[in-house]
Image (tube, rainbow, N blue to C red):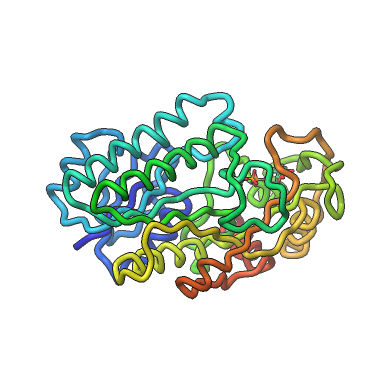
Length: 321
Ligand code: UFG
């Protein structure tokens, strides 16, 4: 039996594949639109194809004995989703419907879905639990919430169980230093700061300094990508054992850091100082997003291993390469 990882050549997908390999057979389906073949472990069976393509899925499900699907393949930039909503609804919603349809057809009944803190929109509370109201404010968040709702309906009607994982700010790189974050263009804070400290960017633009936070800059909950990966494996094993089914879990460290604090830790880790420019707020940025991950801790014993400095150290090692 194999696990199908859609989007396994991407940032979070490739780190999850690394946790699965050796324990499970892994088939990766990725169209390489944002993923990279060099992030893939030699031991996976790689299929270069699109999950919205029924013929590709027929091939995957007939040629491999798949018992679960981990679904990472998606567009995931908030700003881009505002500019290109149809691309987001097509790739994130429509393609997932095709995937679910084929899973039902081939009797594949376990599904782990990558969701996001963006489903909460601008929450009224600082510490977000799974009970916090969802109210996405951009097409990216809406596309993920739509799939969450579709999943509940599919699980009700068919023999399919799922776990939804809502990530907060994924960051860091594998401790072996062989895989890490590579986006083109890069929009995320930590890689941008590190690229600047390595001399690849002139300065860092801080988007907004008048938020109602400790220092006026946005506060986020940064979670190591390997901690996200181990949560997926636990969720899968929980589905297989029957301990959990049809659940949604937040994944974060439960601690918020401001943009300024992140820059300071990056300076400390690299031993270099940054040139900062204060810019306007970025559209769609909530001021504070911090997760309570108590629910997954209680259900599956998941606890993040890496704290902020270790997250940034691992990212620094990767970007310095
Ligand atoms: N920021 C800057 N300057 C930069 C880049 C980012 O000041 O050059 C700020 C942002 O405005 C934000 C914070 O740093 O306040 C973090 O920004 P990121 O782009 O690193 O991450 P986001 O919080 O915007 O996005 C993350 C995920 C998304 C997800 C979102 C949920 O990457 O997929 O959290 O809110 F949708």
